[in-house]
Image (cartoon, rainbow, N blue to C red; front, side, top):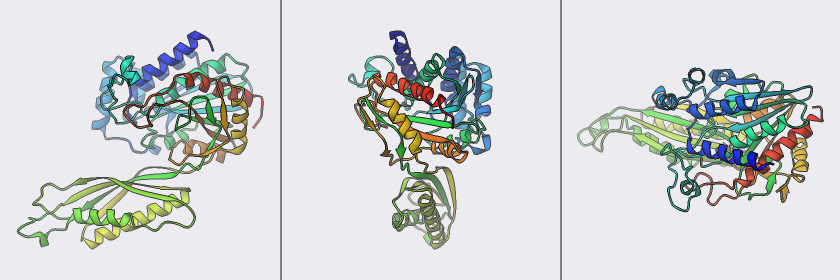
Length: 426
């Protein structure tokens, strides 16, 4: 890879890092991706509503949360045509490169950032070298900025290669809140994809190490539950109230008592509670936020069903009503062994790769599984690849950073895999 291309990859990654945006609010990020796709010269660009099934979006914020980010993008000079197509939480883009007859290869990367304030310490490289987040309270703490740079670099490399076929790159919104995968999977653009590659950097794998395809991502569901009771004076007449706080507390305690399952691992967590008005008022309304996970989709659904049973029982015990809502979810889908093996074989020939692991248990959740499931249900193959990068601290921490040498490795692996796949027929 030339010095010029290497520098462009680094600059791209740092530009994305400076301007992080949370799920369904990636207006400037989408616009920057569109600019890069136009520069590369792809054959088709689907933006916003064109790239998504609107009614399949999950975890979309309220308009009051979307509008400030849209206005910020407008003030930054983002093109009005892009803002019109991404308004109301319709971020994301798909780029299509046509290179003659051959299989259709898909590549999926993610756009969004995390709600977290980035460190400004002198030994944090983004702060020291001037590309720390400019959106205070938000940062790319999981490597999505690197994923975006790799995807654009891969498009450039494939266009200049011997690849024959179609390459579709899916720039998916709202991964961190598991909201965008299903909407992009149902867009129609995956229906002719023969092979799908997805990627993630790091996850405790150092620069030079590749995992050819993960297995056992956990199926997951995010839920809220709102308990509604009746308020009363806590000193004068507590018996006249129906205590939503007590119902929520009972539900939380009993949720952690849900039986484990003989078929495999399950997880449950209640991470947030909000409600009530004052210490001397019986709480009339309380909302909790929870998640369930399972080693399989069926185990996740078992845990979710049991949680809902606990919620209804706690509400009844305290003479309250409860409304559970699934905010977002994702299934378990494993990388296909045949595609995983091909990726591994290609990886050994990539400069800078020192170790290749055929597979590894993922152990967390990712809504790319909707895209993987769609492709594999249609007879194609999918693999979720880990591209190692040295990161000084863990993902989702204020000092997360990557080794930018891994950008070049990622582009080489992805583009060379696409070329190898183009020599085959599904």
